[in-house]
Image (tube, rainbow, N blue to C red; front, side, top):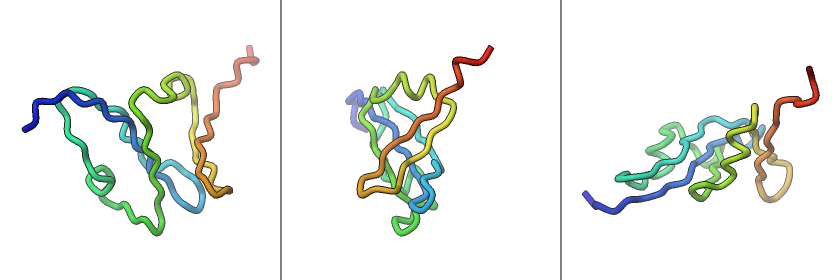
Length: 90
């Protein structure tokens, strides 16, 4: 085992047709190892699923504050779309 401390960002698996998030691996840090998409999500099929890999610490505030997440698959480049609680309601 390698004794290097790693900081690994989250992987988001999503449906290529709908943008629905299927799995979020979360971030990992410490004496961990890098994994393949197939290890993280055994049902991964590149014909049906996309995967976004984020850097460690990326979008931390958005993930902490959002109440929903999807991937916009309408363009050439998939984009994360966060939804947030309505802060205007009493």
